Length: 405
Image (cartoon, rainbow, N blue to C red; front, side, top):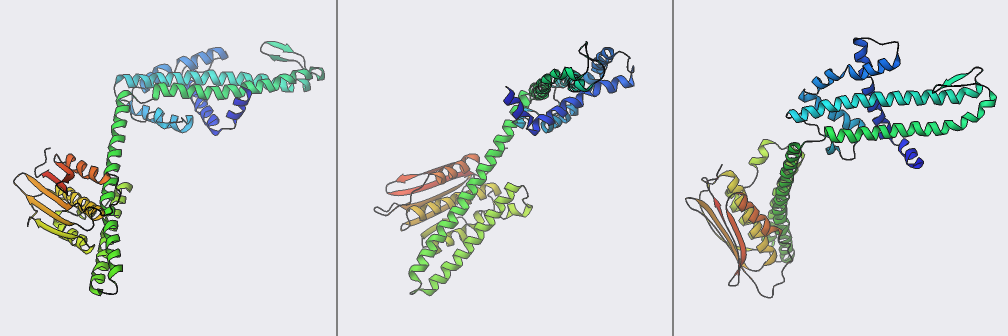
């Protein structure tokens, strides 16, 4: 027990909590100083300090912003292990306001009790510590003790009293923290709102992770294939090497743009122009050329005008195509890839088909790409599928042109 108290006295949180307790002890005397004034009797003054502020504290607790102020102060000085255990939101509803009022009253009463106890303990400790040197008698807890060198034995009680004082300081702060968690902790509604906020943040980060996976994954796959083909033909086909290097440069530049935009989202400093920079179906020609420059044989049949496609649908359709082409180049680099993008009155329909080449060494995948394209389609109210059929691997998606609000 003594070791725990000693260890606690070495922690800064112990003293910040003690400060929080003692600050509240000053509220009662200040109110009594205004009205009705201090009494000559210490017990009466303490009683008045506990009673007079109560009406003011109960009314003050009804102000919504007070709960926020108390929450901030409690987090800073009481130092909870998890800051979420003490809410910061203004009071919502009568129950939350009453809890704030009860907290204010309990805080003032507890502060008075702790301050009074510490004052008595410090007084007794100081008296006993100086008693052997005193030339007159002193009163300790109502007991009159004679001073003098023959009273040196009372010094044996001083370390014990110091331990008690340390225990009071540590225990008072911990008790204050426990009460704060109960009365200032977030309500059920606040916990649900916080959980929803965290879920939204997690969903947004997962979407950004998917965005990076699709964009950077395609760029790296295309770059690796282009660099490998250029190395093989560097001595025989200089024109192809030049085209491959140019494609690598363009692919890297677009990947860097995607990375910078995504990091902008994460840092919450995205510029309005960043969203316009996201590739759409209007950029499908460049995507196909990049794949061809990487050595893939790509046949395409696409609509001539993608103006009717909403921006978000066009961007997600581009990412689905990008992921499908990446998978085709990674898992079947020698096969013919057929790309079809068609517009109907209600949907954007796209498919990417490649032949499954038997005996070709296939790169191992995690399945994240397929899950990503399915999630993109589902979030828009469409659907996407990926699987083998008659020796071919087919990725298809149908996305709505009209999004329901």
